[in-house]
Amino acid sequence: MILDSLVQAVGNTPLVRLRTIEPPGVEIHAKLEWFNPGGSVKDRAALQIIREALARGDLPGRTLLDSTSGNTGIAYAWIGAALQIPVALVMPSNVSEARKRIARAFGAQVIFSDPMEQSDGAIRLARKLAQEEPSKWFYADQYSNEANPRAHLLGTAEEIWRQTEGRVTHVVLGIGTGGTVMGTGRGLRAKNPDIKVIAVEPAEPMHGLEGLKHMPSSIVPRIYKEEELTQKLAIDTDAGWDMA
Ligand SMILES: Cc1ncc(COP(=O)(O)O)c(C=O)c1O
Image (cartoon, rainbow, N blue to C red; front, top):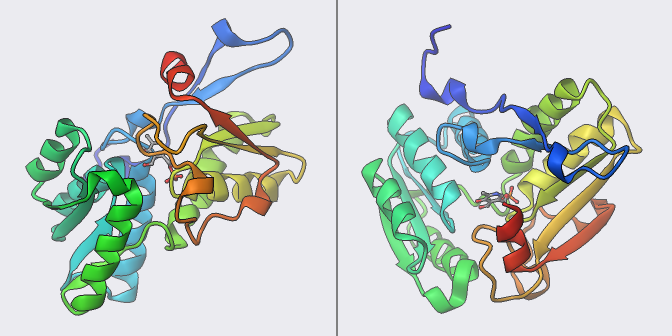
């Protein structure tokens, strides 16, 4: 198979069985989102946001602007390079050096926000820039853009349903913008309303789980609807890293 563009390599990630951590009688599978070209699940949302903006005519002609703690930025940056769309990213200045370099290597402009304000500081700065010069920027706004959960409704959920041949009973997903958990949850529940949708957030406001949000102390994303969840779990940083 020859792909016409790297963007066609987004999604269709494998499921792998985690036998070593399965309790008796339970199957646990992990979806290998790092198989996406940009190395994370966020390729899916970024691509859907860009596709819908192109279809509406919001792009090309402006620079795509968004706030991101890293992986969405990498996704916008490489997809922008592949589709020849200029990209500017607002991120807290303390995100990892690797993420900054990857974004720049793909040609994205990087704008830094106050590290003490974490991802909410990046959101506030991106909003301010977009308000000041609306004709310069296409503000992608992954926290409010329904294309974000739609990527998972159309992609992630369909894939999990197909890969498990409809046997899936529970899904467990991290919360950053909430796009993954909202879209995947909706997509799977449309197939089987009994499926349990469990979200995982960092246990503390100041945590080391980059990309994930502690909701009680954050600006709650417009796309995030807690009432759709079956349950929410809080995981501390060390436990999260040990399992990963
Ligand atoms: C590796 C990784 N997983 C999950 C998430 C959270 O996904 P979502 O924004 O869809 O809630 C992020 C967010 O940046 C991430 O970087």
